Length: 563
Image 1 (tube, helix red, strand yellow):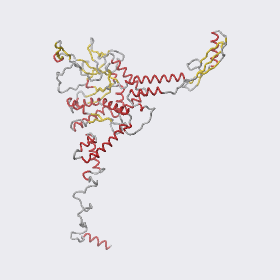
Image 2 (cartoon, one colour):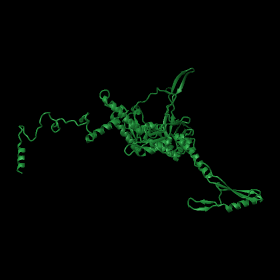
Image 3 (tube, helix red, strand yellow):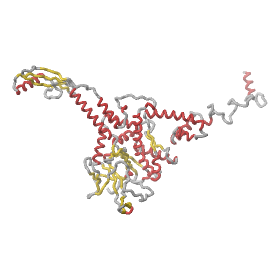
Image 4 (spheres, one colour):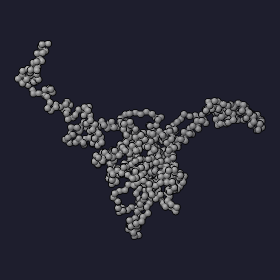
């Protein structure tokens, strides 16, 4: 376990140890599991974190199998990941990146290569669904150890049940650099400066779902941090330092919905049928004989018909008693004699208000608008001002999910660019915040909003057009008014050139901007174009310079006359 599997990306410039802090660097992902040295080796004391995480992930996956929860999850996944026949679900956006076009082109090519390794265009729905349900996602970055400059060779999914992120505190050997001297009332005080090694422990067959301590040496592999792409949901239980899934908030609501549904079924099965009460007159018979007489009457008149759902047969089964059968009660002499009365069945069996309430509560817990419940139905496309506030909140929620999920692409792209020497680790730190990811949209509300935005932009363009070239430049108008990115501007310009060459649209340089008619060609025949000097008679091509008929035309006329 001393040797790490995988690779590590080292910075070319070593940072100095001048920055000393008693608070260790935290990724704010809830990972607070430290490794310690035991008497027989190394172990990870995680205080039941493994057990609880395993139980949580199993519970999340069981929740996803419930029909209502599955429908809600599908709403989220379908909004976040849009599959199209022609477009990719996600593309890299580099309009805010201050780099050369060659670098941007290489980044786009490497991003397409990463998507091909993941087969993201085909498996995007499953990948995002697994991340949303489990609350975490692990990918192993496989490279050629002999030729790392060739970049990533494969990206392999790892089940979160088999891997764990660990932070190990380093032992400080240099006391001078490892401690910060602070002067106080009691003199100088040494403040430790802890440092950590971060890596992953992978187990092929996890054997610790019920244990408190997980052995890190038996059947496990330590993997370097840079060899794993680790993406979490962003939800963290601060009390237990544990990463949660977005389904965690819906655990109680789903359990309540399940219990209400089960209790409703039990109530209807037990209270729906009507029951009869038979009062049997036993006279003055002793207790034993009275009970025997009552059983004889029951066996004589009771006819229990049982329907066999497998065979479709109806048979008489007198051996079993159920709570839905009739009641037989003895009555002593002096009473009203044998009597039969009927108990009514349950009332208000068609009431489903409580079921609908807990369904809405489940959707609210998952951040999904209540109007999306299948029973509600109906979808009205109006103006953006008529859009429900819940839909706007849901669109923002999906946007946050996309941004969090895009951290996976960021880590893979970083590894690929550094390994292929396209950028350095220092350059990546400057570029990272300016690289964005554009997801494909299929939200009707978003489409409606975009349509109105385009109409507003075109209206602003019509007002600002007379001032282009005087107060505003064309590039300013395209970027600030029309909100076109660098990639969109490049693609639009290329498409316009192709359409001009194909003759689909006229060339603006050859068209009168006022009338829209084509301009006359330089060096052309003015007579053919209908032009020429005013007041002059157009020249006849059949006459010579002196105005006489040419010999060829004369011979042609003579032959015509002879015929």
